Image (cartoon, rainbow, N blue to C red; front, side):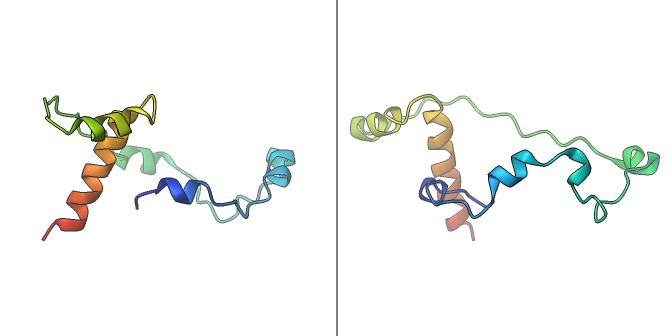
Length: 90
């Protein structure tokens, strides 16, 4: 699932004040299974694939728009490209 910036602006329906005021003892954990030794014996560490360093020519106005997003603009560019690829895969 891809999170869109416009979705981040929507007001949350979560009662965060109530959540923040809860003590650990107030949290219902009954539907969470215990993690036993067998779970950890079979667990597998999955790391993200490393990024590839590239030189890419883009229009100046496109680059400027992404740079106005501040720190992490390259991550945003990657997400845009990844979203396009996912939409156009056959």
